[in-house]
Length: 374
Image (tube, rainbow, N blue to C red; front, side, top):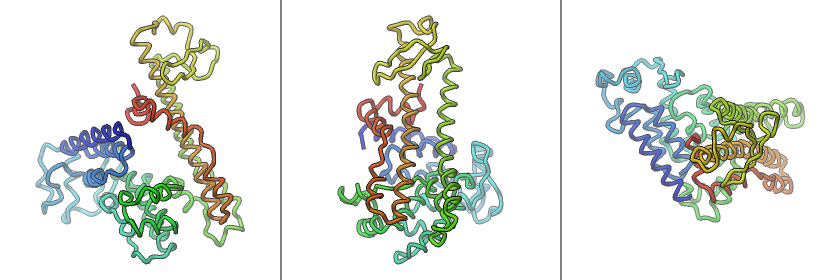
């Protein structure tokens, strides 16, 4: 992990800590999720995510008291909600997150338990001698309760990812052996860690594989085409959403007068190239009236183009990785080692370019991936 990412993660943790102290659990969760992406091995982030999921502050948890009247009067609606998870509170009472979505105390408690738990067996609530089928059964039960489309409690996204990683580890013989021997990734020797980290599916792809038409091993040969098509559609949904979000952000930038396009057309016909990444783009005829050569405005505009370019690369990389994971999964199901090796070597040019930008131009990378650009 680069020092730049570590420093940025610390900033996000500080913002999250301040948000927790102010009673804003949703804001804290957002910044902690950013920090986790930049610094996944930092276990202190998990503890803060659990605190955010509980709606707690940096000090004593409101749930520590025996009644909800201990919450300060000035904390308004959010504070009274975060002070509710006590044994005397109504178990069926729902709460509302910052974005207006409701969740129950039980959903919040599940998220909190997952985030606080490090051991994969404990996350799935299975014994260490549990079979692969037992682990899968436990995953299905928890995934239906934890999926972010159903569970809107703060931290549900991170808890869902953690659950996904746990079941993939414990149902893969090689990964399970490494995990049983060393436990936490931080304690794994480098040669084992690299192999261990390969071939993890995204949480959504894994969920689709279980519930979107995997069909169980007894139905692999009968009726597989229709189920496979349904699984493909479900697996493609996250990619389509990413593409739509990218397009929406591009349209938003044009509404703000960005006056550029990555493809030439009647309106954008004058080609330019960015300074750092040498990305070609096209501008309108009156572009220089707004962004004169040598000005700071032009330099910032140039950087904005590069930010959108890297975001597009990120979307392309997500698609290429999902395609690779899908090929790897199918090869593993068939037990074909040659096909498995070919799937692992599936080309991902966008991901290579993202890595190049990350190493050579870390500020542009962070602006595109974490800070939302200019």
